Length: 183
Image (tube, rainbow, N blue to C red):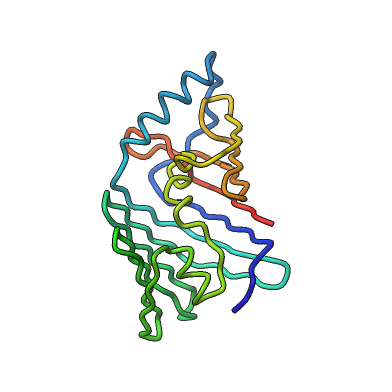
């Protein structure tokens, strides 16, 4: 098992259209409150993007396909050119990882499962919120908003999350490029 701290993750989300820089708003905090309320109602979503992970001695990248439902989620990690992959399925009963070599692993959380069987310390529970541009509930956080009322930076659960770009998806403004750093 490899210890991947310090750890860096970037995920780029494919969706409809990248927004030009949004104009500044007069009351950033009011826009942020309204934005949070709107995004917190989003319980079912799909995301396709790329993920890159690196530390001082190792790095990898893959395609990430994430489907979120109110009571379960499924994450497919597909490495390039047949180098492997995994499927993670989580619900209230726990998390199951199906590796590309046919092995099945179980744990109570995705973080525990990935750490135990891959050595990766990936904050899946936080990413379920960060992918929507929200802080994880009930967690201590330090946040910085951009001039348009969305998260620009979030420091939460020992991770620094930087929201580099937003995009329009249907009637929502969601992150399009996110960098996460720990360590």
